Amino acid sequence: MTTLVTGAAGFIGSHVAEALLARGDRVIGIDNLNSYYDPKLKAARLERLRAKAGFSFVHGDVSDRSAMEALTATHPDIADIVHLAAQAGVRHSLVDPYSYVQSNVMGHLVILEAARRLKGLRHLVYASTSSVYGANTEMPFRETDRVDTPMSLYAATKRADELMSYAYAHLFQLPQTGLRFFTVYGPWGRPDMAYYSFAKAIVAGEPITLYDGGLLKRDFTYVDDIVAGVVGALDKPPAEGARILNIGNHRGEEVREMVRLLEDALGRKAIVRSAPRPAVDVEETFASVDAISALTGFAPQTPLSLGIPRFVTWFRQWHGV
Image (cartoon, rainbow, N blue to C red; front, side):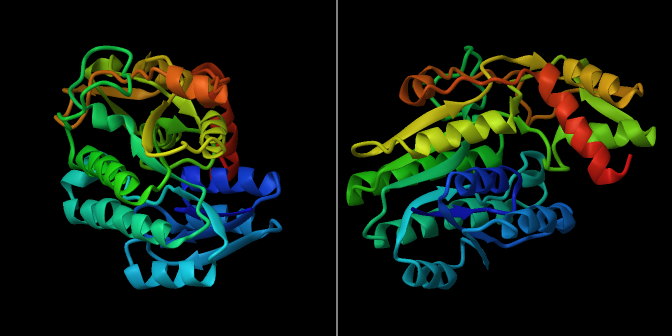
């Protein structure tokens, strides 16, 4: 089976591609290798994939209509698409909003158009985000909750993706699953994420900023659990239409606990500064995973107390700490 993975040099994309290759799938990866964070990290992830049989890579942008038309024309045997390419980061959407609309909205539309041209397409799985829950306060977040109060442009673009997917499923009978990811972390992660930037600061003896004293809660989800959920959902295409599934660790944990675990694993204390919560940040995220569990048997295996030390082991190797 041939699967197209967009954002293949990214954090989640590279892990998903590796899992698909390990089970014998052929994987075509596409990524624009942009400089939102250190391209060396993306290149290293990509090098790991290139060393595996069955992987091929296209350097391109999913929002480039011509590039995607050429890719699907060259590979009409693509049976599945895992669309993970996006401009990520809640706070950066305040700095460069145009890149979010180009990558996340136009990019998703181009993927939808590419998908409907593939006559043998079995399933399109794409990345959404827990950020779509916005100002919701009832916990845990459920897929049936209203999601019309986004607190960032990033969240708004991802909600737009969900709505476009629903329309394409209705109009073109395109089987789709949107996965609302909850705070993914782990080895080979994104340097812009809090746990990674905190680790760098702690090692360097620089201060970290905890909003509201670190009392904000996040549903931290280890990348291996995420991959299990993505692959499980990919193998269960809906009979028709589009669906949305949460994929998280099913627990909200205080950010200050994550910092404590980093301190323990790194053997150093953090220099902590407190600041008010920014307008783009929510107080808590907490995923109901009943739907994906019923569909695939998904059961997260990695608590934060295990996942953070595993990340730190990789972090030390990568940075030579």
